[in-house]
Length: 136
Image (cartoon, rainbow, N blue to C red):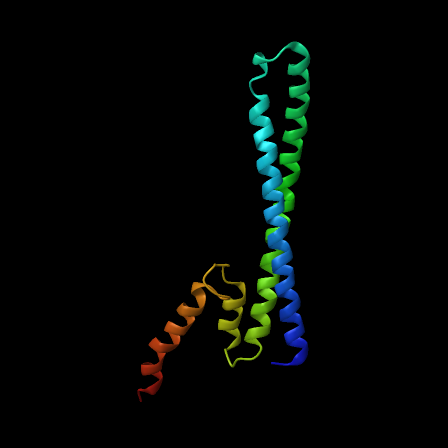
């Protein structure tokens, strides 16, 4: 592997870690906000002043929840882009034909390896084609 590729892979690993940490943090914020919304749902149990305060807390908490969603989506997109960059780098060191390379780069993200199940599918396609190529 070329030295600059090692640096890029290392940087994309950091992007993956940072994006994962961001997603986890925003998830925790969303959980706390959701708890506040739930606590404020029973406003009838409070006096008028407390009910008004809980209503304000509920509104702020709902706004926080709405702001958390795009942050979590953005973190997920950062992770997806970093994964695709690593796919391109690893595939640049192979003799995989362009058609299969494109399907491997653009394949769905999965927790089971850099290329997910698509790698096994491409591998099986080559195994299936081998007897046909060997025959006269």
